[in-house]
Image (tube, rainbow, N blue to C red; front, side, top):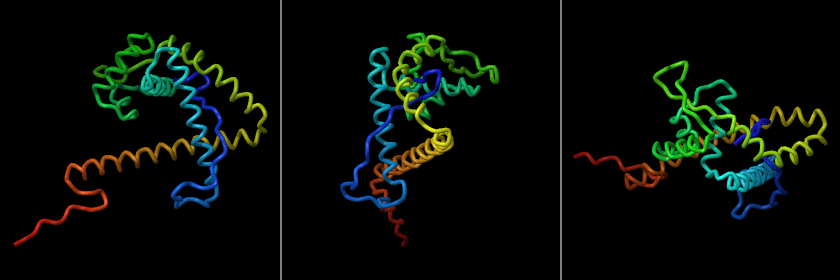
Length: 202
């Protein structure tokens, strides 16, 4: 879920000097930063897990609310199918998450003004209040660190973090495509790296 300040995460730790088994990217400039970002993400997820339990929310509930809030702020319609795609959920699992959030008063279903045949999802005032409460401690801690940054450092973060977020999003799509290909290969009885043999001709 988001606070009014947006999605916020905590800081990480130092990166290891060596990866077990090595990496083709080891030695590249910024390689250690990759690990700092990974620790940052891990700690943010750990924080979200701690607070979501206090508010009686499941793991996917928080991510679904995040997606709806982002879409609402951007003025984009968001439907159940969008949530399923973004969270990689089945239709039935998505329906369960949405029903749970509606029952808890965090989401409402509304007719999409752009297409009255479609049902769009809207976050409620209660969802935003809960978001502010859930992420208040994180906002205070992170903003205290940012207060010590120079204007130039803030500008670098403001410019680079969206680019890094897009990079991770692209990586997720690539990983998803690889998973789908692996699954298809398993169903065909072939390995992903070993294409099916061409049928013999007489």
